Image (cartoon, rainbow, N blue to C red; front, side, top):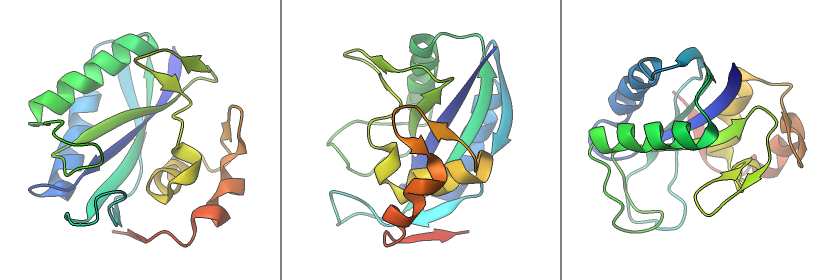
Length: 158
């Protein structure tokens, strides 16, 4: 079994309910077991400022799916929740991103792991720290070492 960490985010409809429902959808993935979920966090949008605030969280799973198969499964869940990719960093019903998959470093046209911006985003690091505060990010070092760098980003635990 491999361990993967997944970021969840939503800002359309009832984002907190959506993220909680997405946790349930993750628990139903084939060949995958949901291990833990973080608290929910309210965060300001990045990029396009004129949109609702986000609710973000993270989950850890054990899976025998390959990273690419897990990505496909996450994209299918996004579609089930009505995700439309109209504009980069735009509003969304649900966003699911693989942050880490074991300690693998992957760079393909479809998938980059670790997620290339995870160490720069409070909305990723704080929920991830809920799950694995001593986590080492391949190529970046200890997760905890990155928290001060994002402390000025607006984030509120719900």
